[in-house]
Image 1 (tube, rainbow, N blue to C red):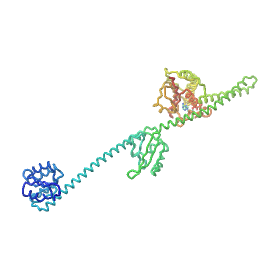
Image 2: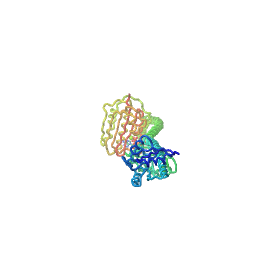
Image 3: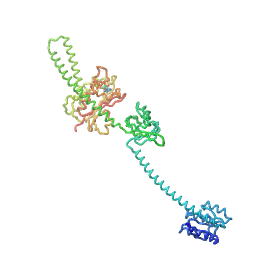
Image 4: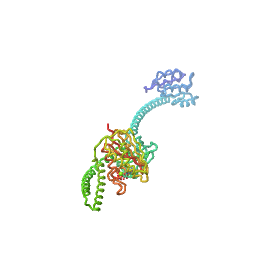
Length: 510
Ligand SMILES: Nc1ncnc2c1ncn2[C@@H]1O[C@H](COP(=O)(O)OP(=O)(O)OP(=O)(O)O)[C@@H](O)[C@H]1O
Ligand SMILES: [Mg+2]
């Protein structure tokens, strides 16, 4: 019976070589070699499962032969055949990769058993090797897949348009993407470990406790908030957050979207709609009042023209007349705001209008106030109404003077500016600013500035901080209406303690 597998016997003595061959030839295909050199030669052409190797041979000793065999065919099992005298060397051979040794003289059954053992070992090793290779291939494949998934995840995470922040259950930042860093203006390492609430403005920093509690209960949240950036500016953020479970603990995943621009546009729209509706109301009112005042003034004049009036009546009539004239001025400002004034336009030179207005008001503002001019000589003419523009200059200079009762400086400058979309975001209070070329007229003062909370209201009619009887709150409203009437804008930039700058923009005709 041939059990399969090939055996090579290498022995220089014919006796043991042949007896071994006789013992195993019925079970396995057997070849023999009279020395190691011959045996090694055979190995280059044929594959043997087991080699029986004599330890002591001329030309090449058994240990060297064993090492050579293992180099050529590492899977072949080598069985050392030895006499009792070399049993130590045989043991050493095992360290070099032989699987067992056989002592001369042999017992037939021992030989068969040990050769079988070698055969078994070899087939197990082969199987193991095969499994190992398959496993390695599988691991390689999975690693590659994982690398691709990881790269994709990183790509999605890092290059997302929204900021993504991963927080622990205490709302402490664990990880975040590039966009989230940009939104806050910090580097990644500066943000890791920080509490998200520390970037909130105002009261909303105290809301995170409640938000986290809701998130951990499984609620998904969508809300708007405002964050401070590293530079101290504020950014409006829309946050969409939820808690997810990872490695048995809950973490918060939160998406942050910059909505500053959206908010700005909303505010602009709201502001211009509000001004529009107040304008309609004020315009209607002023129009009716104008008619009433015309009647009062007309009749007062008529009575004043008659001769037989007592002195007291005369005085009363004069008070009526001057009050009615004052009321007319208020109505005129209101009409300017409502853009119902005189709409006759002709080419006008802003520098000339400034000089004219200054000659009228200089007595009023001097001596405590220094007026500096920085007028652009090459200013193009614009289509406008000189009286209305003069009124704006007057209103702005008087406001600046009123803001500096103890004195200060007013700088008046003019120039031409190209408004492009990139600049629009930087201009404050600029609803619906059109693109194009504008002549600007800038009036800057060194007064106390306007508190931030007043800024959104100063162009509204009757908004005044001056005491009763001092201001009607119509100067800026009228200026606003006039700017609009000219297809232009009026903007303000002011910081408490740093003065105020008003700029009137009038489009340059193409
Ligand atoms: N240059 C300035 N510096 C500081 N605050 C200003 C300045 N200009 C305007 N303001 C503020 O804006 C408010 C509105 O100005 P506006 O000219 O419309 O009204 P007013 O000056 O109060 O009254 P009126 O102009 O009708 O006499 C002022 O009351 C003041 O609080
Ligand atoms: Mg005023």
